[in-house]
Image (cartoon, rainbow, N blue to C red; front, side, top):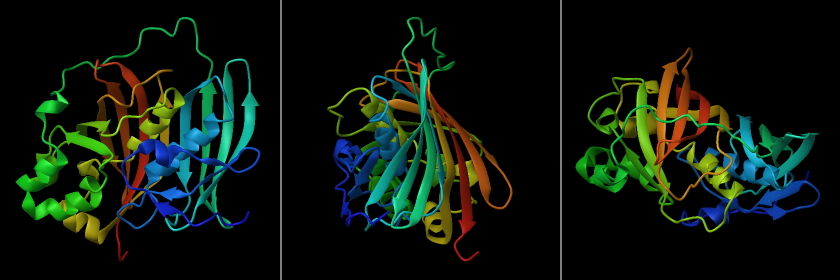
Length: 295
């Protein structure tokens, strides 16, 4: 497959612009806008959101139920990405798609996505068992950068430089004052610029959000700047399960994350995602790598 045209940098404002893809022939789509991460590669949330959006274009009338992505190599932000969608199944209840992300002759990712038909009686959804602080009562990242000036550069590099998202960690002291003492963390996220579209676009927006925060208990006991300067942090595998046919990515979403360290710098983060009313709308699992850059 030929290399796509050069990509232009996204202005970090309107997520719809990033998620929108150009139809490039039968079941093929192209991204010409890039969102760069702290490692100088395409941000993983972009790949997740765009892949789900591309697959959804081939499963009209059905809502996302699962997205699983294996990241194969870092995507270059200066080059566009080709999304190739292959139909695996179109049954009475589910449609399943396989996707490849390609730059030139190299594979960036391999992914599977499934979509389902709405049921007449979807059942009683799981709800958050405890209360959480309201996001409006928590400090913004800009306020945290001012409160902890020694970490402000790291906050700007990794988080504040993504103005499309408003992230409010519930226990920020685990990032700024001392190493995280517990495996479970929680944080609120919402879009600063509301989506104007409906339906699957909100699922794709949630996929974008889902790669935006790191559980501090997986990281070595370092300051934030030292961590991002001296360690390579990468998402190896990422899976999302959607528990709601409809969700609103314009409102606050609560991410409750529990992480377990593994061998050789790897860790597994399991997350439940709730809407403001406490209803569970998605779950995810991330296989992470946190390794010294000179290793």
